[in-house]
Length: 400
Image (cartoon, rainbow, N blue to C red; front, side, top):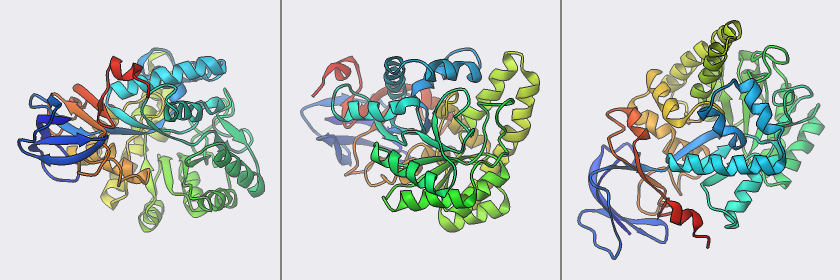
């Protein structure tokens, strides 16, 4: 296939340029002018960018971002449903994300390890869908995050139990490990608080030892100051949410190349939904403890040169996330890179995708308008390509 007449934003840092793109066997082979081939796809002057990556998804319940009601009610309703219902939700959500240009999804825990099963089904051509990276179940302390309203995490205490839990997730197919280092928003106000530290440094160290010995990275749900510091002292590879990143935390992240996935759009959406449904006091508490300080943390992390990736969590979206990154000081190009090359680096797959370059997998999104002029144009999706194939109804039904 030759994609002709397009403006390429390759996300390497190079400004947009006009070119044709030749794809063979799902890989970008040539980028240049007036390329010829048997199959021509006319981009009609659109803007070709790398396929987008959503680094923080809970695939079972992503549909909640498109509905009404509060997270504290909607998430348990889905996660406590049957295995068969959850896999149907997950498949539908994955297809929806793919149609929006999300060619790669990183699931940060799903009840029943639904995301793991969905990934296997996609890899086995039982169904078709986006590329997926999964952690299986999260690992939490007894009574920790994702254990109150539904079982999104296994409950363990002490270094030995943590190690065993990590090894079990790897055995069951985890690509990486997620540890719940703090309380969160889902169980507020009855059961948890974003400032609570729920694992000791020693427990987090045990998770990292067990994971790193099997070439798996460790990321943590960590919101408040102490949980973030415990996680960093424990040797983690990434921080999810990170509402309060102190000067010391930022210095450690720079020194050890720890990445940061804020999920600002998802966190903001939780507070906004609480406000709209009559829980003004809870919404204001969330804003004070997490939403407002997190914006400053993103700004400081960017200034420090920390690798930042885009993730929606349950209620946000990648387009909204990029807009919030821009508001926190990233240029439009830098914001776009959080969902492309930065995300690929976080997934340790920058040699495979994340830019429009020869030799990369042809995961691509064609936009009608320039996203560098207005990041809202990221929603103006004209076509999506996964491994060089155009995503449409025929593609969905064409099982190999």
